[in-house]
Picture 1 (cartoon, rainbow, N blue to C red):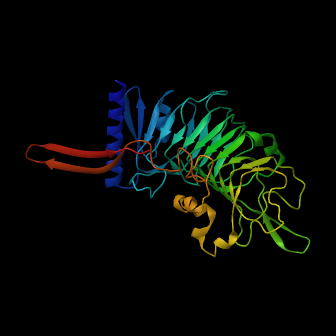
Picture 2 (tube, helix red, strand yellow; picture 1 turned 180 degrees about the horizontal axis):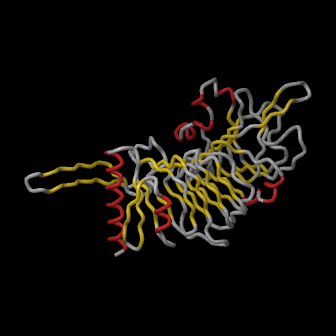
Picture 3 (cartoon, rainbow, N blue to C red; picture 1 turned 30 degrees about the horizontal axis):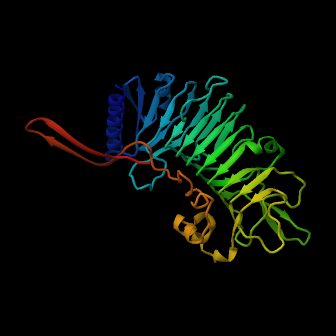
Length: 358
């Protein structure tokens, strides 16, 4: 029965994808509840959530979605892919809406919360209660993830993460992610830094500035946490900059293990006492005004060629490890389709070819 239910759900989702591809860019929301599937319009997520129960799954087809909603139940949201050019033709884009997570206090989630969804930066996700085991998988996160109380543990699995995360999150684990703009300044992060782990991530930084005693403006970016097998792009078009504030006295808790950085100038300390082990360095002269030569843009093949490898033999950054970065969907997607109307027999023949993704 479970297999039959899954097949029915996949068929409904496939039809929804076809509809989204053949009509406008708007998608279809499908609520799966105890083997029964109910469809909702692209802007009726609030209605779908209201009709759902604990343990249900809400599927989002290829297409555009919008609308505010408030979540008080343990529901999984599964989209059709978070990258518009992923080669599958399937892309779930939640382009506007204020999302409030108000699941009962102290709840430990047993499944991922969001999977395969691109959240536009015009969205906001606000966690109003203290919950545990929040999982984003293969998503593009919005810039604004707000935490009113605290999150005991937050996991990012192969995501594109926009912006910083709140220091009210007690534990963060990001694996095989791309991070668009990271910095961790402030004493609030000191209390959680040892529980924030970045593993096989490719990280661009949000820089700060200061003026040295010679009147020169300098960049820096304060980081805290434990970074293992990561690429950290500490470069400002001129030189490698520090991962702490050279003009301040802020104490940072950080460890960098087998990571790739831009090589600083001779005698320049970019770590300021942070724990370092087996790190690698990329000469800034390799950039040569070519954006593609920056370390955050190096391909897996280029990293292999340059021997920027980890102890397991895979490359540093998000394309290394057992589960390399990808935003392609986990669910089967429609790779081809054909609809034939036989007016004589008054029949519609639908041929759908599904392909599976990692």
